[in-house]
Amino acid sequence: MPTAGGKTFVAVNALHSIFSAYDSSKTKAVIWLVPWSNLLQQTVNALSNPEHPYRQKLNTLFNHRVEIYQKQDLLQGSNFNPTVVKDQLSIIVMNFASLRAKNKEDRKVYQENG
Image (cartoon, rainbow, N blue to C red; front, top):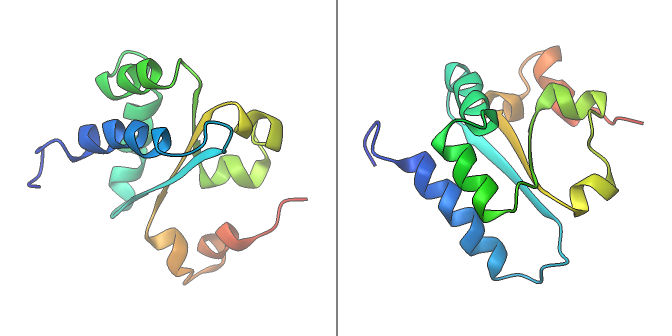
């Protein structure tokens, strides 16, 4: 799809279709990859903002049980544990650079969090 063609809105709606095909007791967690760092914060803001149409759709589809995480949130353990994750849709937004691990900060994605 071209820029501003609705890719994110399609993805938001696809999540419901995907998870509806699985047993409802399964954990609903998604790694949402964005290509560039500048899109990372933009995507997090849109998915987190209760006034944004993307978040409104997610709330409607998943009964307001949605949490958006970034790499830093996971490394700090911010409200991310087996009990919470089992009861909600967890979307982890990262960029591709986080997986390439060229420097110390990027490698933190692989760091264990005790």
